[in-house]
Image 1: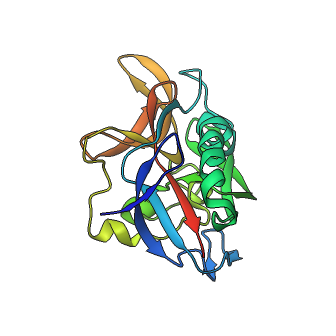
Image 2: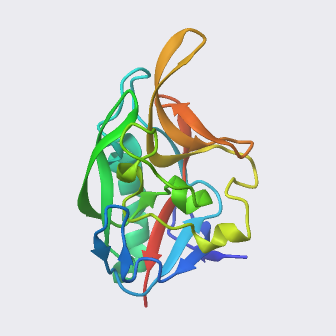
Length: 209
């Protein structure tokens, strides 16, 4: 059961992930945000496929500089804005802006209408200090588990893997060093995926009356 948004291109079924989740909340860095009351929606299946970054052994300039955020989500946003108009909320978001071999190293506050999910939104996991491969820069305002995932698995029914917004850092596989981003694999595990691989794009939006 879900809400079908007929945007003319994706025409996807979106599930209600939570209510008022960005209203008067404290973000992972301690900042208080208030984007008002609204409904958080995520598509039941990925809307597109994208690399996180074009070079297999180079870390992106954080999530803010990655291909989904700069290109793929912008394309999806244009289609959604055409049918949702001002109901699609521009949110205050804290996104990573730099990464090294151990993951995200910096972040900043900006605004966005669509973002990929954080690992905390998926399974409620906590974050540690910079260098832990999952830190405050990967989480930002997305620092609570989405209520939807208390009742439903966070991997897709048809078992397609998809990207999250966390930077994993460098890893070695078959004697080759790769740059990685956190992803949800097709069998439901959360791990680091090669940034040059094409994976699913499953964004979160916030809508209001």
